[in-house]
Image (cartoon, rainbow, N blue to C red; front, side):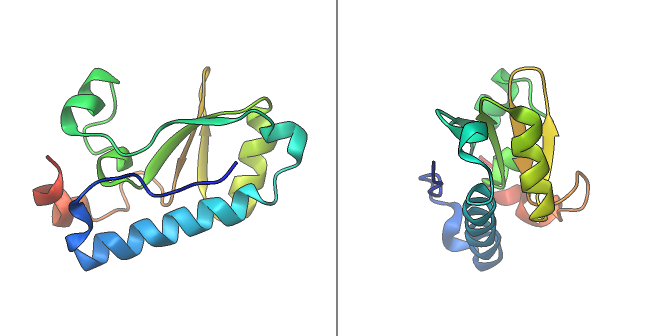
Length: 119
């Protein structure tokens, strides 16, 4: 299970590009620490979302998915997976049907700076 950046064209903003590259790198490194039984068959189900996709998914208005800095994953062991990601400095929120991963806690991303990129 490895992570590739989502295909989208917002990477012209250097700050957003740098954040995305750091996030993808951090997620890949964190996944390497998770025991195989906790990720075997795991799948990323959501990453970058358009405003419409986010609304359809009932996502937060300032979801990090809108910037490609949030991801949802389904794995066999949500708790074990989340524990390992948190140890690597990621935010991992366990929901009933998936684990949401993001790089920083809610409200700490300077979302207004990137709002013009969210389409």
